[in-house]
Length: 205
Length: 174
Image 1 (tube, each protein chain N blue to C red):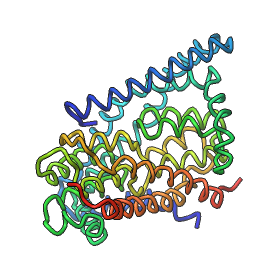
Image 2 (image 1 turned 90 degrees about the vertical axis):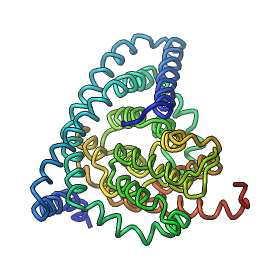
Image 3 (image 1 turned 45 degrees about the horizontal axis):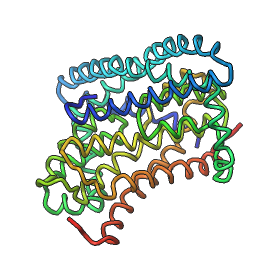
């Protein structure tokens, strides 16, 4: 994850907290239920599973990263962005009417849709920088971008399919259509909420 | 209907190959660059994945995961959710590594083709790390007052979970 400074620090702080809370609670629970014996095995198994998991993901991450980079170089992402523009105009009225940050927003949403969150984050940050005009308050479009970024429509969940295959699913692809339906609905809901809420609570900005 | 998902990945490759052929020779170089980046991302993910998978496998081995699920089973049953999904729901908003760890433990714990695993897959694929995304997006530009961002993102996440449960009941075949 290409993050620097404050943002990265905050994210890793949360990760560390997650690790500590889960580990401590598990230890205490195991101690109380007289089940500590099961933990040593689970700890070593966990470390081994992390390597096995990364190993099984290496191929897909490599292929997917390559395909996305190729698509970008060949102008496919630009095409997707152009196709998305009319829909995004409704979601980000201020950015699109002024033109400031509109390109970054479309690039970010396209990257999110293709499941390349790592590429989407730097794009989102540059979009945020364009949208910001000083101060510590978020504008409507910035909020919309963040909420949509937290619930992007997903075209092909490459990592998830790889995980399902690695786990030995009979039909790893069975979840794709449900994911299309749910993630698209969530994205529509995200935009709808973000467009309605500021009207309910007249602007404070 | 079942043929559609099988077409997605081959079609993406087909489009990519076609696009590479139509554009100049540098498209394949771009592929190599991106593939290398993908490798590095996975390698960089391993340390945090290691910590979180160790933690979640302790959570499952100690019986805490089952106890938590038991605790919340009443509330979840009322919402139509299987309680085994609890560890995933707790970790999903916070971190990608933690939820990946919870997800893999969950599908090995309750079988890859069970309803819980199917539902977990749909939730994993349709939601994102709400807290992480919102805080990274805003803190990168020094925004402190994020207004309705967090509540809206969580509302969407809750809808995502409930709607997934509804959709999975339609699509899940034994």
